[in-house]
Image (cartoon, rainbow, N blue to C red; front, side):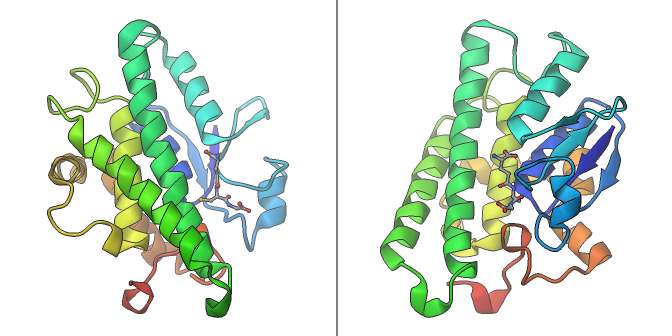
Length: 227
Ligand SMILES: N[C@@H](CCC(=O)N[C@@H](CS)C(=O)NCC(=O)O)C(=O)O
């Protein structure tokens, strides 16, 4: 199977990490939905990453549908979202919060990068950042055992840490030192996990040296961009 999308896309990264955690081999095509839009449209009519192209040629998108397929592939005993019951509800609830916060971080980033500075609408930017903060606060507050839901790593942990890493990369002021101690601890622990190390966006940026301007969702903001 082929995973289409750069790891700088957090939606792509959560799929890549899940594939690696489950030991599913894949080929990686690090296309961006911006300068390589036609190649991305060939596998997703909406032109967004990630897509997963199966050996049969069937293309799956978006990240939630792909993760559902991967879980079905490995079966209920290894799936990253439990098959039923309160365990499933908890993993879905936490994952939904992490994904919602991620979408808000992306919306705030687009407000910055897709408009000229004079057209940035400060109230909409603040709204999105506040929604993201609220989601992160809740995620930080629910921590129990080493994992966010249950006694093993689930999709809740993967999507939460991908969101946290992404927020720190593109909008460091959203994550002041010490504000989210539980998320800090979880992200720091998983930063040593091979699946998280291999997909960390900075490593990919170094290898590919892409133009940061043309890929807002997937771009890193340097010090001059930080507020
Ligand atoms: N809901 C989608 C979101 C995917 C998404 O927004 N991907 C971004 C990259 S981070 C993209 O391709 N953006 C291009 C665009 O929106 O035109 C998913 O979970 O896969």
